[in-house]
Every structure is written in structure tokens, then in C-alpha cells.
Length: 166
Image (tube, rainbow, N blue to C red; front, top):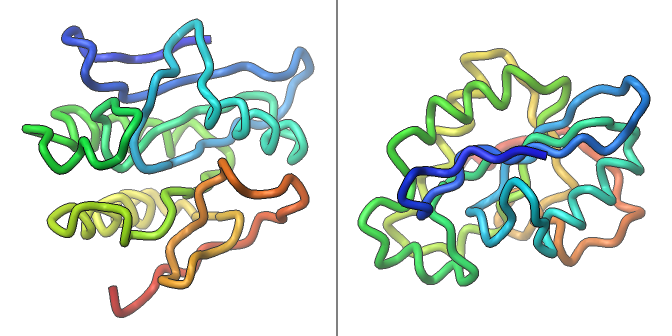
């Protein structure tokens, strides 16, 4: 269990969990923003991600986010001075490079403040530059990848096709 958290504590750039004692591939989950999970404690979302990852046969989880700003309420991104975080791009590149499979799971864009809704383009660009295919648990009506928290464990992974008009 490890986490890369900024010295001020406001940003979490990377979270890792080993979930198997046996050799197994690593999976990256790219979600919207971190909540309370840290190097020693899991939150509800990380517990759900762990459940999916175990069912999919992965042995290690690496978590990153569109926005590194830590908040339990996504509306806090609206007033954050820097919701993305200074080192977010570098960490997302490393996370995608370090995983055998990358699952995107940030949910529908409508929940984000309007001025932050294009951030996913940059993250997709990182994946394209690394030639990393992106997977998801399904898509919301806007074509963006479903967030895992409220999804049933019988969801299958599919390749995420980014929406063209958003």
C-alpha cells in the first residue's frame, strides 16, 4: 500500500494496492478526483475498485485521476485554485506506463464544473502517445466511462471509444 500525496496534503497523484500474493498483472484506474484514501486507508471507491480488480484477475491496482485535488464532494473542484495539480500529467504517464491494462472511470461530464469538462482530452492524449488502449465498465449517456462505485460486479470490461462530439 502506497500513495503519492503532495506535501500540503491537498493532492493525491497516485495510489497503489497489492491485492494478490501471487504474480498477477497490474491494472490502472483513472477516475475523476481522489477522496480520502491514502497510503494506509481505503475509501468506498477504492474498496469497489479492489473488488472489480480482484474479479478481473489483477494483482496490483494503481489509481490516478483527471484531477489530483482531494475532495469528498466533486463540487469542490469548482473553487479549487488548481484542481488538476502541478504533477498530475507526469504521474498519469507513469501510471499508464506501469500497468498492463488501463481502465478509465471518471463518470459523466455533466457532474463537473463546465470549465473542467475538457480535461479528459489531455488524459486520452497521454494514452494515445503511449499507445495504451483504454478500457471501461461501460459508458454513460454522454459516452464517458462509468464510475465504478455504483456499478454491479457483473460488469464486463470493454474498450472505451472516446466520444467525438464532446
